Length: 164
Image 1 (cartoon, rainbow, N blue to C red):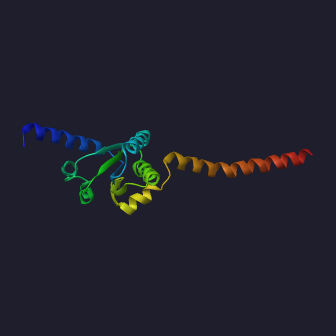
Image 2 (cartoon, rainbow, N blue to C red; image 1 turned 30 degrees about the vertical axis):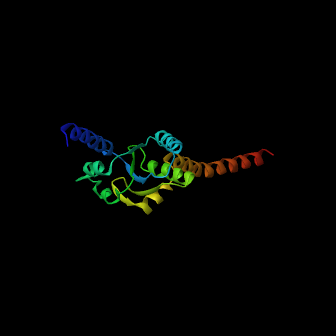
Image 3 (cartoon, one colour; image 1 turned 30 degrees about the horizontal axis):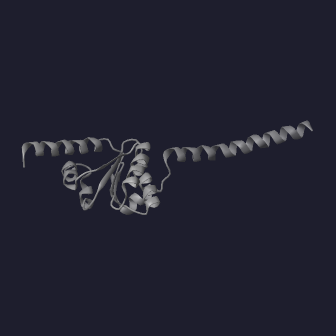
């Protein structure tokens, strides 16, 4: 192997390490079976969720994760594999990819890491069903607002009754 080829591979290995550094979650997916149009749609949805999605050679990913907290991913790096990485939202990669898997009826989760913990295919699937942070906050705010609204209406009814 030429020096240039080794250097090119090292650049990719360093890129993978950099993307993994500080990641809240990493999902490994089998991406086979999707069309170019479907892949473009999926990439757009992932970008909108601030998720980095890249296909790498398994051997280069193995070299990048060797000796790191992500080393356990090596057990699923067989066949076509892509990495979806988020540094801002721990559930975003799994959530967005889960929607894509349902929409297209293709692809599947292999495994991943969420907030430093290895998750097998079943665990990643459960993480994928957790609503986004914004949805959870909206639901929480709605649940807080409901009792307050009832109390305000009750006080208003009492005040209206006294005036009558």
